[in-house]
Length: 281
Image (cartoon, rainbow, N blue to C red; front, side):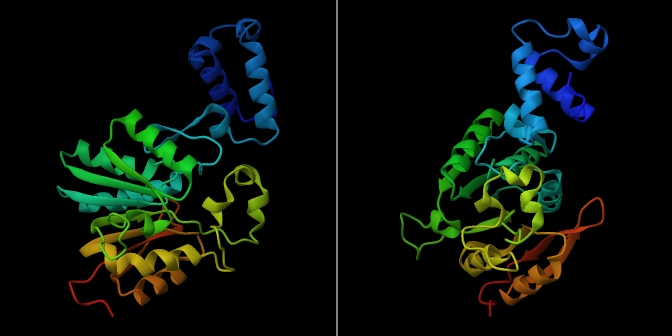
């Protein structure tokens, strides 16, 4: 077996390829691990992962907030950092929330929120939006797979949710969550690790700027028309962007803006609220 991979990745490939748990392998000599039919698949997956291809794409799945989500090339791979937004959103776990996940990717954020609210006896409505047809299809599949009733729309940020194509008619949401593209286009990490294989539009956006915040400005421009009075906006961002995102949020007229930190105490998200009616600048 390949020794070039971390042990947890080798186990993941073996378990996924054979359907057998780790304990089964540990109880037997390595010469008995794979059948003649299984060996070529495992060898191919080991080689692909050693060459750098993301494990999530090879196995077609990634865990997020304790659940398995389907992923595939063309969709951003869910990451544990984004679980911070679920935790923060659950602080307003009241009944009847109208939730919007902007730039949904695999749907892991919005779907996890809906499921966690359900587990708390709360009912919500969920709308998810992405500009990528692959992401929209993946989110729909994940919603069905996990038993969540969600409207998943194809479109460019707020444009996707205009009523009957009329941009003057805007549905309002109580909670808007988003993990927008925020990687700076000159960031050297784009040439490293899994980022090399992930969709650039989900990392840097369609029209990136030097600060990586072009899509934040687009999102915030539409907030007054779409976030219900008192509604919460949650935005993930890069570890060194919090002060800039807070400034943009406040300039957009949102109130009680607060920076959030992940479990490693890194600044990773911003939370803010829509003011009462008529109070936007």
